[in-house]
Image (cartoon, rainbow, N blue to C red; front, top):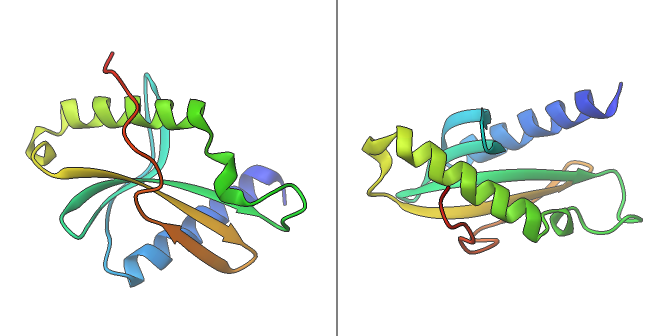
Length: 120
């Protein structure tokens, strides 16, 4: 199994985990002209942009550390783009969460980072 296939399976695992916690998933692997985000959903009245990171071990660091400032800015641009085309969700508060997966353990980091975008 290659890295992309493993990543897809981990994202499916994360989606099932989120649904079991009451999250309504709106999009999986949302792509647009400014970038991509693993999942978009609604949790506790917030529009949440989820990034899923996994590691088979912590030798290369914690998976949550892989969401660096460059990736955060990209996710914020995707958020802007998504909200521009989904105006029915525009009034919802926005949150950026990271799901760090090590083997089968999920660490859900709510509000993992603040909005860092500046629009287009």
